[in-house]
Length: 125
Image (cartoon, rainbow, N blue to C red; front, side):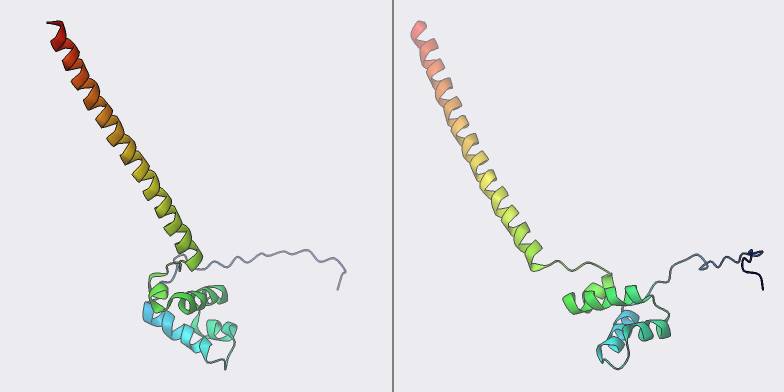
């Protein structure tokens, strides 16, 4: 056989188009198969026709947030993110309080200036 062989044919394999949609029950069942530790995640993924990285993701979501996160395929929000959002809410509430106070002060100043104006106009007549 020659040292350099040219490829004469090229075969392209496609996946068939659409993505599969897994039910929440299927996701939970498949993830539970990985939790007993008898088989690797790759073996369980291959047997069920799931990409191993997808199964790792489902497993992480389920361990972090339970089957509800797996069912909705949602990200689980960490405690750190929740604390950051709560801090932001407190900061915005303080800013809202300052703006409310400024509006009240301006309203009172406007009322006083109107009453002085009426007094000055009344004294001229």
